[in-house]
Image (cartoon, rainbow, N blue to C red; front, side, top):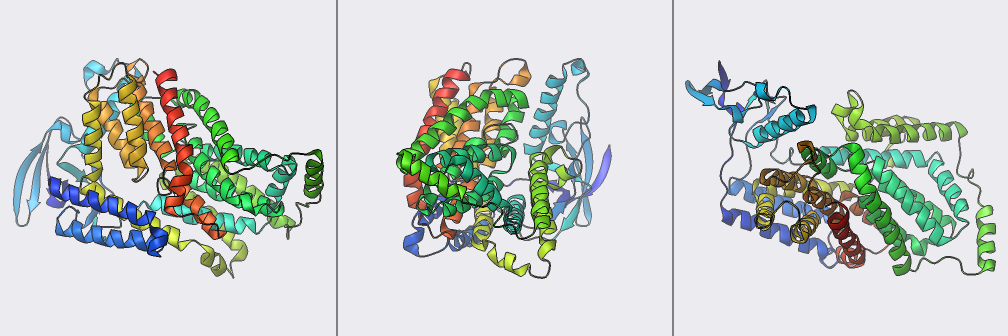
Length: 544
């Protein structure tokens, strides 16, 4: 088949020198150090990350690592198989080019494989698609050129939309009195006992994180926690509650295949089903949650009420709370209740809802926020002023930095380093060394970089090295689980390791609680060490 396409439809990748990669890696280290010294620098996170984003973009342009030019949108990889003959327009001339089959997505599979089981054909299709997406050059068809600044595609606008939409939705819904009502009901159930309240909110955090986006879960639970502790006049414990809840969001994100993006990436590559993922991950989540809450209660001195007199006093105190005090309008209260339930259900099922699955969770969050804002349509500006623009600015700048790092092959270098370690070890069966190195290496790198490209990179490496998968008819290698646990739990090592821990720190600052980058690392380290140690033992013993 012969087709004519303009040359901008062919995507190519330019080689990057090791010196350029090392330069950008040094910038990443410098960014981490500056964030650690945030208080001493007297600068907001958004300013620090923004400055590094500017430097990275300038150096990216100077070293030619960034893809400048118009962006192609609405296109697809070519489907022809086994080869496509092209006439590529190059100014006033045309060039003839033939792409072999591996440079496009095959439209059909080998006849010898037609009788293979569905899971084998699905695995083959995934492998062919992933191979096509990583080969160069690529041919894109039916696209349209759009002028767009190079840093715009680097920002994960889905995450930005989730944070903005969820924050607005929670702020407006809180005006209905719903969160106050829930907080008082939970507080009453705890009998006013601080440790029991910690366990109740901890379990709520894990459940919400398993079915919602971690950021949304943290925003909702954090808001409820602040209200409850304020009612109990125990705001001195708020710092401990919020930090523990922030750490638990990443544990809850391990519970199901769809709880986090790394789970989806690795689980799909390894052929792990939803049920299998839940059955294998749930025991760890239960144990890790219990140990985290136990350690948190000890380190933050969140004690149970010791005497009968104290317990009776606390019961009388919470009995005097009226959950209906914050309800100004019964109609708006019930409207907020229905919307919250629908919001949770829609977020939890976004991936399977027609049309909504294409638009994503960010659309859901902004859509629900827009509906709730109708109630205050003439005074919405007060909710806009309450948005944490520093947090949004930081995330956008950080995404730009990571985007440049990807093009400068820094993340690739990280993956190559891990690959060199893993290739020295026999993959089947996975032994103590390769599992431990991969899990802790993934955790270390995901604590300072986006765990989504890291998970994708490591899963591709394992696939290339032939790590056994469930799609192959047997049990998946424990190495896949090392990536899952490391990519998720690594977010508990630093406040920038995951969006939910950063949101937890932001809520602390909102309530004027001191928590710097360094203080978070120092405080969270025992929890992260415990969780990663437990994960290592669990993968080695239970998932081999």
